[in-house]
Image 1: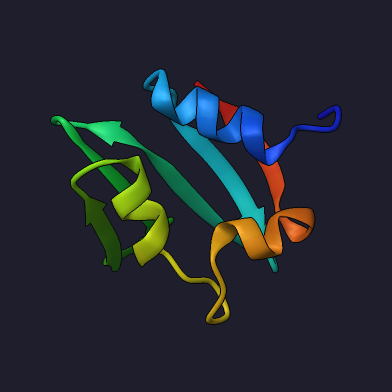
Image 2: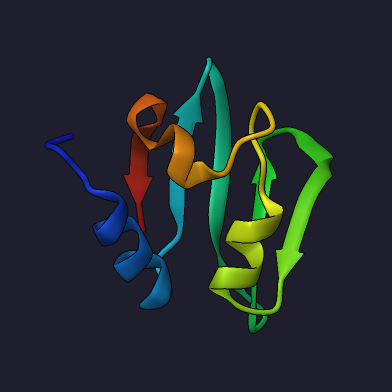
Length: 81
């Protein structure tokens, strides 16, 4: 995928898009469903995190103890729906 910025990521999520991405050989989902924003690692139901809004979710999600924004350059976007 062409260079996809963190700003575009936020815009797409705000519009209701679902995004699948990879980080360190693990696959993740982030998006909106049933009115709430959700995040999880594929095939790991215990990893689900729910946020009241996008900002709330992004503050809760940590990968290697870091926010998505902090590791953005290490994330590979797989699909945007």
